[in-house]
Every structure is written in C-alpha cells, then in structure tokens.
Image 1: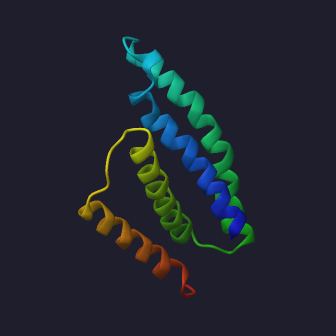
Image 2: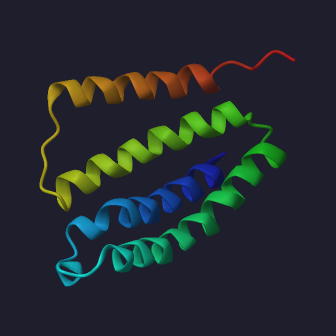
Amino acid sequence: MTKVVLLLLGSNLFMTAAWYGHLKFKWLEGKPMFVAILVAWSVAFFEYCLQVPANRMGYMTDNMSGYQLKIIQEAITLLVFVAFAWVVLKERITWNYALSFLFIVLAVYFATAFKPSA
C-alpha cells in the first residue's frame, strides 16, 4: 500500500500543478486560453503516468477496492492542494476548511480500516 500512496502523491503533485499552477505562472499572463490548456495537459500527462500504475497496483496487487483507491486519492489531493494553496497561492486555511479536511481523513480511515464484505 505504501507504493500506491507514494504514486498517488506524486500524481497529485503533477495534477495540482496542471490544474492550478497556471494561476500563478507569470509567463502565461496575456496568453490565449488554449496555451494555458496545452501547458496544463502537458503537465497532466505525467500525472497519468503515475496515477494509472497506482490504481492498477492497488487494485490488482494490494487487493484494494475502487472505493478505497478513490477515497485515498481524494484525501491526498486535498493534502497536496492545501500545501499548494498555502505556499504558491498564498492562501490561509480557515477553520471550516480544516474541519472539512478532518472529515476526509476520517473517510479514509473508515474506507480502509475494515474489510469489505464479498
């Protein structure tokens, strides 16, 4: 499961950069929207190179369910985004965002702590 989580973490670093990085790339200012889209797609390619193996490994080797993989991926996405928003976008986390994140962490626990019934 550790390899799966590390691959998902790496994939989310690329996806967060693809989805939100263009908001701070000064060299994209004044460029047409299609240029930002092409840049984002170029970065997102590497996300897929990590996401697909993570999901296959988790599902086929680690016997994780699709639900478990998705919930873990969403929690990692939020963790990566919180760091990105703080460092790159210079946004602070407020109590309601922190509480929302706590609920996502609890979802990961409940999704992975118990074996799903057949």
